[in-house]
Length: 116
Length: 115
Image (cartoon, each protein chain N blue to C red):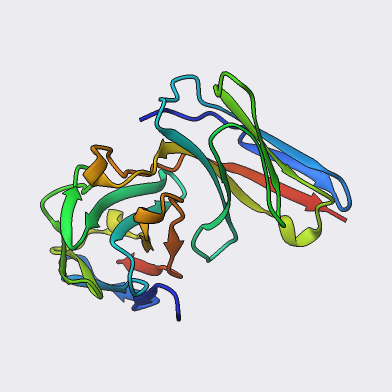
């Protein structure tokens, strides 16, 4: 499974755009890139997933360069409620019957602190 | 749907006692995962099931841990005997992998304290 590296922590202010970059040099062809958000005392929550180029939803954008060895989660205009731990995961999400592991491993995550 | 349901939410027990954590996945989901979270080790994958069959239990710390999924709507994680180092938050998650989205839906967790 591809290992991911992301900053341990980041600080930001309300209203700013936050970009969190994740490195995954050993990403495999079948691997997707997924980001989760976790608030204290809660389970992680899916934010966004992508395979290549750019993906955008109502919460965030995910930028993936052509070599796919890194990805950047972009949170537009953060608020205090965006203070959380953000995890980057890389793994194959195809069904086990397709010969993939179906396994998802969480790294250390990035603790984002949004200040007023 | 009510989401992934875990019980108990909190448990305090003494070393040596048996602990059973329970999980009800989202109806229709064919994958079920058990994770453990501590400050020191972060989120660790313990075991996961596909269609009620254990696929990978390489994350289970030792023989004191066991997990079962007798049917599609119920799974248990048992620790016997429990030790203080087992204190952690245990999360259950489920997913519908056939959709190829890989999105895991987590429960609220079971916080275990072993004295």
